[in-house]
Length: 474
Ligand code: BGP
Image (cartoon, rainbow, N blue to C red; front, side, top):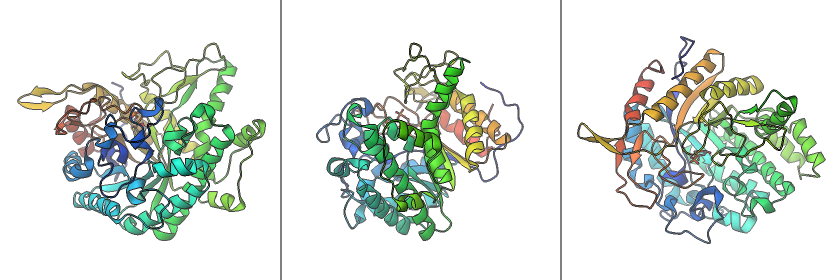
């Protein structure tokens, strides 16, 4: 395990908890008046085309049944000492098609109940407004975020959420991993056109619409909930030059710009020069209205991000490799080990990315995803079923140590939520066997299992970390 060089600890009031997304935990895909979302037709994750409708092999249709078991699950989070819980609201529970005038009351009531439960345990909610869950109707009938009309639908959805939950929810995230739309147009942008048939023009227009929608949500939040804090959410994957060759360094800069652009716009309120240049040189002419420009000036209060891994970049096409397991691709780093799914494990990269973002944007940061997807084995220890997940403890410990280093470097960090604090369905592969949780859920990739919950060894470890505000880290 990495050792810390600093005696500093996390700030007082630091928020500790876990993160989830509606489509990966709730199930009940057609209950409570919910409409279909794109996830209901994505049974095998991001690598395969969508199906015509929901199919029995789609684990997300039932997921881990949080829809019916939320009280039990939140009680377990409370037992670990969570002070924050990140979850998303399923847009298609509130607006089943996405383009209705009035919301579905039953959907709103479900989240009232979730918030009641969190309040009961003194857990602060952190709400993602859109986490890879565009209503399917918007994807099929409008072309997803390629259509400007989605800005209005999203704004209406936000207004409903802010008016309904504004007094109970302080922290909001507009779009999960907004930069991922460049890589996964369906999952992140509700765009059914296969990526290889999608023009850069259409893709960046969709990006623009999401960015404007995010800024409008921020403005609306300030009007309706003056004390709310709105953050953008970025998939952070630091990219290193494969060699000291300046050509590799320049290639690295270009790849890094893909992610920086989203933070730059959210934090500075305008398009950066390097992106405008890319548009010019590739014949991309976006429709950007004066109103859009004004909207974009409503910048976020904080920057949240997911962090799992880093990768390398090279300017030499012969050396460029896209390793199969990597979320965004990228050339593997020869100095790092990878997870069972090929994600390269790099705790120090977290410190690097935190310093980088802080220096670039000068906005408080929030780590809203970090964790290890691994195969777990349920075993019996002293008569109790559990998982001895020392590998997960090691991963999280080492990342938290580096986060603490970054705090000692002067980075302002609001909190930390591990990804998939309870086992859930994977976003990229739609498996349940890729487990992240402190809580094991008895459900298998073939759909069998009792859905019963079991505390893993990491459950007690995390409780200790929270109780000591990180003091127990090694
Ligand atoms: C992020 C997503 C999450 C989550 C996580 C882990 O990209 O925001 O929804 O799933 O990655 O990825 P996976 O589930 O593919 O292992």
